[in-house]
Amino acid sequence: QMSVGPEAKFYKKIKSKWKSISFIRIENRALLGTPDLLCQNSKGTFFTLELKVTKGYSVALSPHQVSFHFKHKKNTFILVSSSLDPELVRLFPGSRILELVDLGINGAGPPLAEGLDACESVLVGL
Image (cartoon, rainbow, N blue to C red; front, side, top):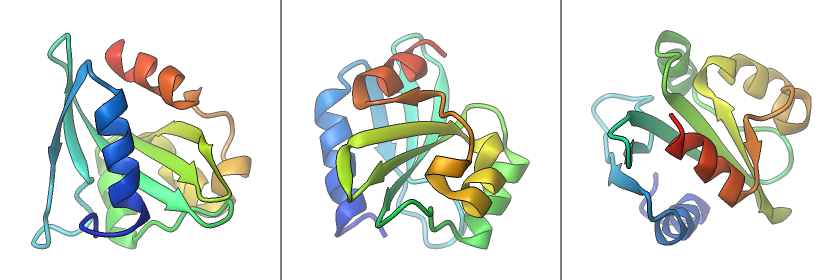
C-alpha cells in the first residue's frame, strides 16, 4: 500500500519535483492491480504510473499488476527506484512488465529513461 513506507516517500519526492504533471493517487482495494497514480501532463495526456522501490534489482509485482499492464499497454508506466541507490530511477513502459518481473531492472532491457529529470521529460512529452 502507498500509505506508508518507501513507495509513499517515493511519491512525495516525485510530486514535489515534477511540477508539470498532476497526480491523482488511486487508493484502490477493490480493483486489485490498479496502478498507484493516475497522471495528466501539461498537454492534457492521461497516463498511469506504478511506483516501485526495489530492495535489490528484482521488481516485486503482483499477478494482478502484471495482468493490468499486460492488458493496458498504452500510456501505462512503471517507475522503479532502488533502495540501494535512490537516485537511480528508471521508467519502463507497462508493455514490458513481464520482462521486469522475469529479469529485474538490470535484465529488462534499456528503460525509456533513467534519472528523475529524464523520466519526467518522457512523460511530459506524451
